[in-house]
Amino acid sequence: MSFTTFMPKALSEARAAAARGEVPVGAVIVSAEGDILAMAGNETREALDPTAHAEMIAIRRACAAVGSERLTGCTLWVTLEPCPMCAAAIAHARIARLCYGASDPKSGGIETGPRLYDHPNLHHRPEIIPGLEENACRDLLQTFFQSIRFQRDTNKS
Amino acid sequence: MSFTTFMPKALSEARAAAARGEVPVGAVIVSAEGDILAMAGNETREALDPTAHAEMIAIRRACAAVGSERLTGCTLWVTLEPCPMCAAAIAHARIARLCYGASDPKSGGIETGPRLYDHPNLHHRPEIIPGLEENACRDLLQTFFQSIRFQRDTNKS
Figure 1 (cartoon, chains in turn orange, red):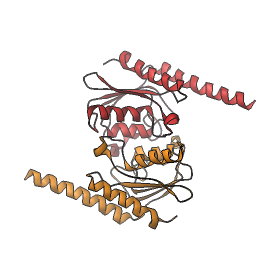
Figure 2: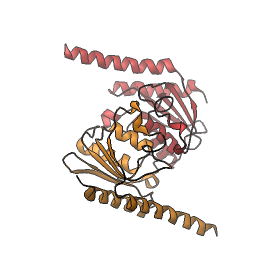
Figure 3: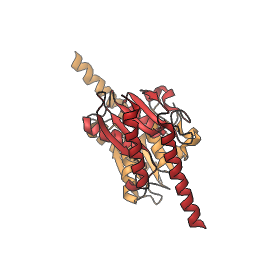
Figure 4: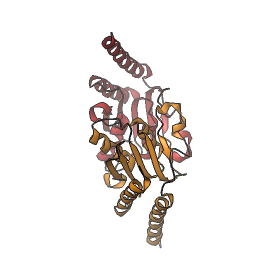
């Protein structure tokens, strides 16, 4: 399993999310055999659903694909450190490995803040591989938020 | 707003979940005006979806009902202390008030474990009112799990 295969697909989902006006985060779930089970980008604005983060949609799609509420042996690739909601959902789904791009000091739930997987009542802790294609993942987010701020400031003036 | 109105409805959703073989947790979301926007029970097994906790389904339904990804001014009534996934979703949805029944020392995310709302990167902290109809909420869960253990032990012997 190589990050040169799957993280570019997650980045592609993130770019597609940005094009729809969503925060550019993308996720891909891959089976133990290396098959892609689900791909998703953020849809919170379009779906008017605060739970529609890329990871959540990908988990739900992958569970539907395999016909199980457990994604045992699967790997989740995501461009940004998951928030506490997504981190807990990853544990609920028993995902084996979490590979992510940029850290999220403001809203992340793994390296910062509640550090969810440090608590025994999560019942499952995936293997964690952070920092994959970190610059590309972070640049995409920074460009998106700079663009929003520019638009907001332009509208003000 | 009184817990004698809404917690019994959440309990009714929890009982309906138990009858479907789901962990008996129920949730109700009520607008600032006192209107019920959504009700739900757990559906993780039936839907094969590890994110389908009562609170998550209720949040998604309420957002669809009001046409917004924010549930500003709303109250969430739920029979069990939310897990970290649901607690974070409550923050994402900007729910104003969280009223719950039984505590959940093993899997909760508010009073125990990661204590999500103690961390600034949650960005929103609802008012919290715990312990409402606590005995009824806890008894329902205990009876359900005792029944599961009895069935398992009977099948073993």
